[in-house]
Amino acid sequence: EDKVVQSPLSLVVHEGDTVTLNCSYEVTNFRSLLWYKQEKKAPTFLFMLTSSGIEKKSGRLSSILDKKELFSILNITATQTGDSAVYLCARWVSNFGNEKLTFGTGTRLTIIP
Amino acid sequence: DTEVTQTPKHLVMGMTNKKSLKCEQHMGHRAMYWYKQKAKKPPELMFVYSYEKLSINESVPSRFSPECPNSSLLNLHLHALQPEDSALYLCASSQATPQNSGANVLTFGAGSRLTVL
Image (cartoon, rainbow over all chains, first blue to last red; front, side, top):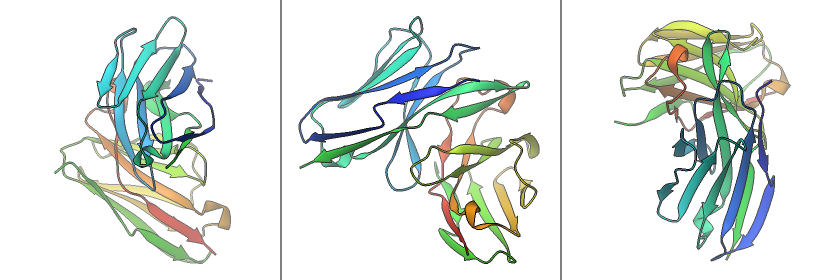
């Protein structure tokens, strides 16, 4: 089974701290790994990673993929209260000739003012 | 227009009711998805439509009946649901079809929160 495992499950930090969220996956037929942020309802897209060792960056958020060790990390620097959300990691897995996006359990991040 | 619009936002129904959830996108995407999300859990795939044809059904009970009338619309018909079906139902769309999705991004709607009494 193609599992996506995220850690920690929850994290509480103070505003201004830097956080690192982890996502590990199994290897079969890897195509890409995606990060989403979910606040109240709709998951919103952050990054898609396909190549190992190439950092994707958007403002205070960055992410990198290690295809050899089968994991990705999401870094958030100088955290703000608006960063409080569930961060979901997902990867495309094969499903009898079709592909489906499978999500990890998520990391619930809480930023204390 | 880069939105996926879902209606209704909230729905309360009894176990004998028949209701429908609706989803619309105008991004020209050819794949559309239904996900179910229980509290404090990740989204779980239910159905995928590719070019208006059902391509993935994740062994979903028949009390959930999807329909894709055209490339912009996706419905989920609900009948004889159980209280454990209460959840957030998320619709999504993407450019690529499930046969070639490996490097594509899903755009999600805000969801329909369903409560079954």
